[in-house]
Amino acid sequence: MSTRTEREIDGLFALPLDEFTAGRNALARRLKQDGDAEAADRVRGLAKPTVPVWTINQLARNEPAAIRSLLSSGAALRKAQERALAGRGGSDALRTAQAEQRDAVRDLGDRARTLLESSNHPPTQAVLERITRTLEAAALDEENRPLLKAGRLAMELEPAGFGSLAGFSIPARQPASAAGDELAARRRQKEEAKRHKRELQERVRELERAASEAEREAQRSEKAAREAREAAEEARAEADAATAELDALS
Image (cartoon, rainbow, N blue to C red; front, side):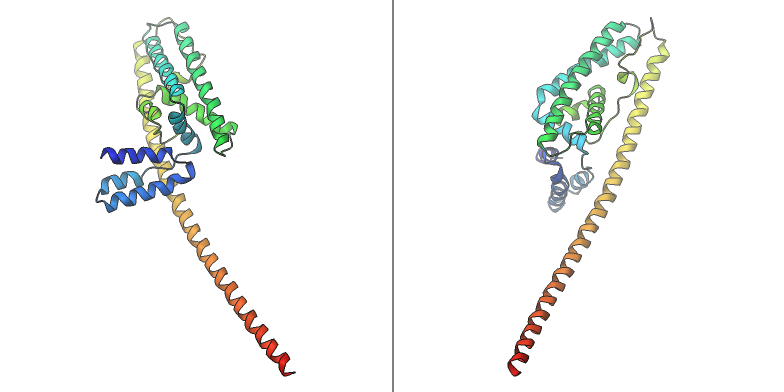
């Protein structure tokens, strides 16, 4: 895929949320007309971000220093977790790393509230919690860290494994199988995330098809109502003319 197309896709994620679908569809049509069917299909498959995902993507563009701070704290926490699982790190180091990540997430949560308010999206507690969970998860996930930094997240995430346990107590030494269990849990989480993404994309497509049909039906209804009003006005004018003629003959 060309650099230009990548820039155009990146631009979709920077749009106001209510402009994403129209922008995506227009880009997909243009790419198809240009003969790049593969890129057109990829663009057409992009799901409209949820409000929390859209907010995080805007933070990545508007607050890059805060995002870098989160990514840095996430890398430190991931390292502390791995050392703890291998029995090479103490609980104090893990708690310090967790506290630093919480501070970074809290700071971005405050910025998210301000951004939502200025964008006319209600900063409800539920939305802010979904933003927080996604930030926590993305900061620790190797696949999603680059997407978080670029402002290209496509879906909400949930913290997995012991990265989400703020008060985790580290035993003196973890058995070797614990690390394997943790890696297996991460793999399962990724597979579940991919499955959830596919379900959401299909749901979005269904809802967009329903919305398009509803819009077409509304347009048909509006046209019928307009034609009915015009017919009524014409009939009223003819009736008034006939009444005037009748009065003239009386």
